[in-house]
Amino acid sequence: MAHVLDSFMGLTERLRFLFGPATRLDADTPVVHKHDEFEQASEEDLSHFVVETDSTGHHYAVRREDLERES
Image 1 (tube, rainbow, N blue to C red):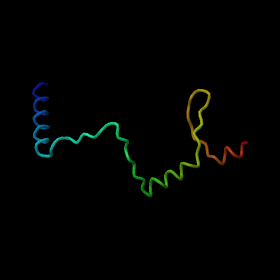
Image 2: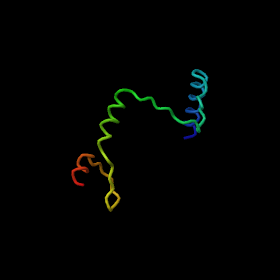
Image 3: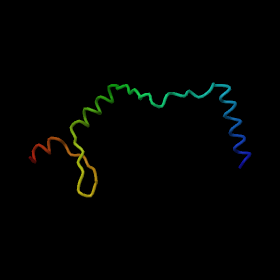
Image 4: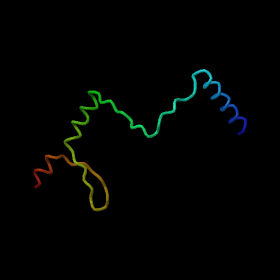
């Protein structure tokens, strides 16, 4: 097992030499999401649903129009 670990560490050291060290970003920096057309279309489709929770804690989606008809 130690030989496998030594081999792996040697490989990663050679790769680090070839590609450079891993980039470390500040963990407190927020992730910036870029919205493309597909993501905007998905958000539009999902905006027609509301997440409901039943008495046992199960979550399910209900169409907004169905909720409006019930009330």
